[in-house]
Length: 201
Image (tube, rainbow, N blue to C red; front, side, top):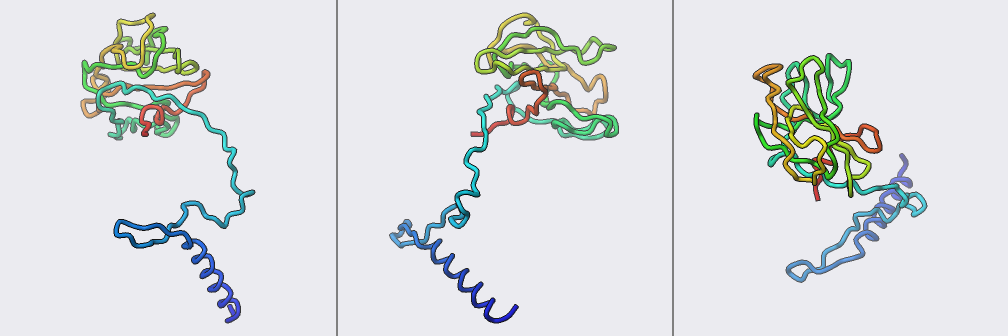
């Protein structure tokens, strides 16, 4: 790179820096300090897409008092959405929330518990629920495994007690962390429940 190009680059950098530092405001001590915009002022406006489609997802109520995702790994895989199962032959379709046997389980959404959800046809000891959303949760549905409920067919609100956790580690291994498995659907399409269960404001 020749000297003329170096001078031009350095000059441009200086001008951009000075333009970006042109705005100041007083700090705690009354001294003027530069204010740098978090948005690059040199990106042409036509390159910024302000019409990005967005939609507001409703909060899912916590299903237990302390929400912790199961991440104990080992042969059965972690509890995050999309985690590997059966030697990478399939993916985990929901999120596993850690529980203890007999722990109170709350409904994540307002809706109707339309039916039981049975995770293992060959082992009916383990139960679950299928909730179809109403109100602000219309269009959403939730399937939950490894819990018992006596509210099948009933309407419930988000946060209502809907059952008790079972001990799934009695089926697999004492080393497995007990958990409730939760799947989420929107307009009958499986979706990742993670941002719904762990939203922050």
